[in-house]
Image 1: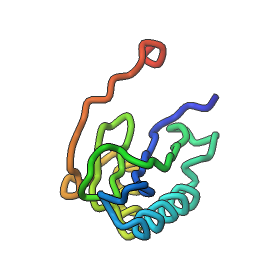
Image 2 (image 1 turned 120 degrees about the vertical axis):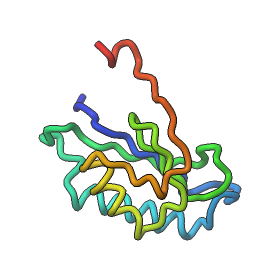
Image 3 (image 1 turned 45 degrees about the horizontal axis):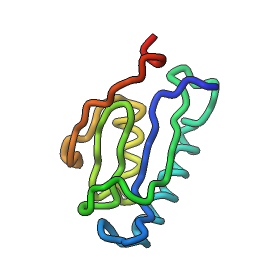
Image 4 (image 1 turned 90 degrees about the vertical axis):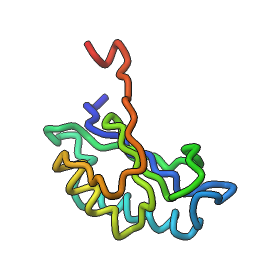
Length: 117
């Protein structure tokens, strides 16, 4: 098992399509995959750890989609378009600086006891 720096969950293919246009969700997911690969964030040799990505059907925020949740930072981005993906990856995931203008919520993400030790 590799060390994980971030896990990105993108609500991009909602079956009820309440939060966003399914086409926009698919395009944002494709941009996320390409950006992670281009920045070599899935490289097991990456000092900070790998970046995981998951396509979610629903993150239970039924507006402002596509919605991207970044763990463990607890940052929820709304309106995640393909054009915003690159900046989120470079400034937030790599640089450690969330983009406040695009955040719709912040949550405290609790680590499991095993992960904390």
